[in-house]
Image 1 (spheres, helix red, strand yellow):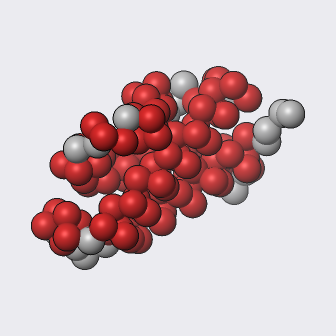
Image 2: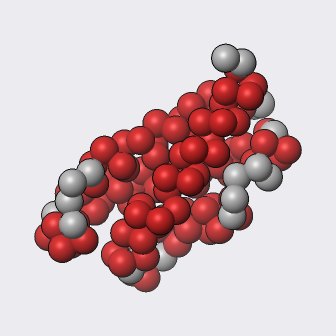
Length: 116
C-alpha cells in the first residue's frame, strides 16, 4: 500500500506537536517524576520515527530534506526494541534540542507539497 506523503508529514507534525505540548513548561526533573508523560513522549517518538520510515519508502526525496532522518528512525527502533536501554536524558535532549528543528523542517515540506 502506497502512503500519501502529505498524510505522513501531517502525522509527523502531529506527533512532534503533541510531544512539545506535553513537555511545555516542565523541567527535566518534572519529566523524570512523571511516568505517564515519559511513556507518552516515548510512544509519540516511536510514531514519529515510524512515519518517517514510511516517508523514506514513499518519498525519499522528501525524507532526505529532514536532518538526521536515519538517526530519528534508529531512535524509534531503540525506543521500541531496546526499552531497557532508554536514557531519559537522551529523550529529554531530543525534545529540547532536536525536535523543534525537525518540526520546522516537516512544516516547510508540508507547505511545499500542499502549497500556501
